[in-house]
Length: 282
Image (cartoon, rainbow, N blue to C red; front, side, top):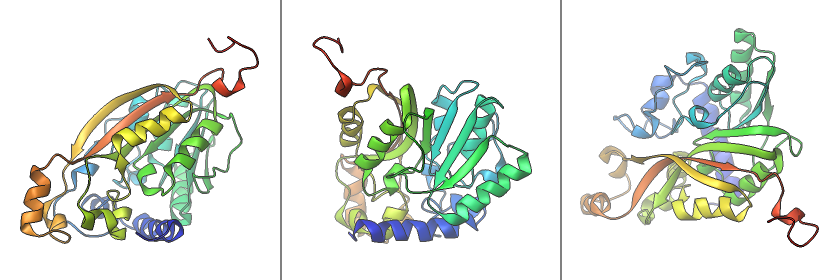
């Protein structure tokens, strides 16, 4: 696998291309990363169209869940969307926060930021802003967000532990996140795991589900809850680019699997690290 910076450059390039494509093109490809399948890759099948605040121009068909549906956003909340793309989840979050709240979208692809800002201007939303930046080092202050959401983005980031640490830093004490992502159970075939294009396609960058949940636990979050889980089936016309017929059969009949999960967790009101006297964290 290439080094982390090369992977980031690959993702930035692919998602810059995606920003200029329509939703139908993105939905029939690996996370929009290219026309690699003639079937609709079911990672994209969660339907936003009935969700309040949905804006079709901001929906590029790139998500693997509906995190805003589970995020318990209240009026007046400050919400941050990691990997905000063209703004879809931001606009839905804004429907929940109302005019008294604030929504910040963070994306490291300039073309996505531009598209999202245009969409926000068209909608006349003045309490949404989009900031270009790396979610491993977010361009926001500490303890600012009530809620953080993200949709099929952490799997694209090489250093997932750094992102989770940043989520903890940026959330207010008592704040929470709801994140949809791609995880693994069992090992991917080597050819899929090592391919850089499959990394940009949301699969090779995924880590083990237990490891993913363990990182959240290890960084001090509490009430870690799996809100939703669904299997992701890679179509044969993608698999045949990487595996022989016998390898495809073995993979499909094996114990390994790829899943979309939506995970919820809270930042404690009193940090375990902040204890100043015996018994204060009991």
